[in-house]
Every structure is written in C-alpha cells, then in structure tokens.
Image 1: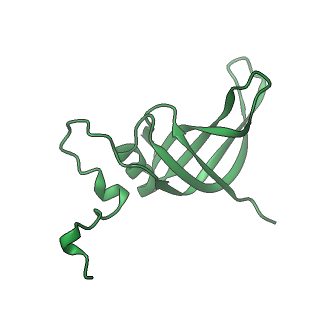
Image 2: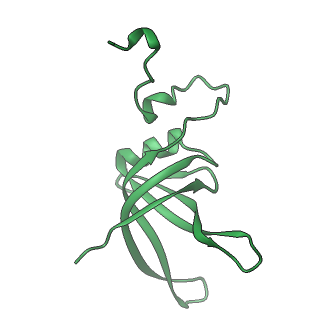
Length: 131
C-alpha cells in the first residue's frame, strides 16, 4: 500500500506553532495549490490544503516561513474524525509532511534572522567558482 502526496504551492497565512502537552512542536499551515486547468470562466482555481509538520521541522517552518512563500511538501494524506461543538461527527483531511522544501528566498523583512540557513547554503560568488 502507498500513501504519498507531493504538493507545490504558496502559504495562505503564516504558520501556527504550538506544543503538545509532552513538549513536541507541531506547526499547521495552509497551502494554496493551483489546479492544472482553468475554470469555464477562464480563471485558474486553487485548492487550499492543510499541512501539519512535527518536531524540528515544525520549528523550522514556523521560524522561516510566512504568508506567500513557495514550498514543496512531501508527506501522507491523513483523514481524522472529531466531534464538533454540537456533537456532530466531522472529518478533516490534512497532509502530514515528511519533508518541506523552501523553493524561494525569504523576502527582506528587516529582521536580523538568518533566513538563508533554512533555505540552504548561499549561492557562490563568481570568485568562489573553481573554474
């Protein structure tokens, strides 16, 4: 059996970091993923997909991602059930991410946080290229 999902999209809002009662980090965010076709009105539609990350990855996502960032998410589809405020049984679908890859650079927000460390090593300058 196989349960694997790969998505590329943009964050709809800043990620929300929280901790479980045992101190494990968990971050939730929503990804807007364009559909591969246009609607009858000629507009491109998107699906809004809930993403969950855990532990160190949750902290990295919460610290370095924000609204509008382009990311690739690899993970698995999880369907969970819960009872709402009225006692009605509901289902929620979400992607539990195994890997989140940042596909663009952080915008300069004027903060002193080193966003590049989460994205990867800096691109080499021409003087650094060995040929």
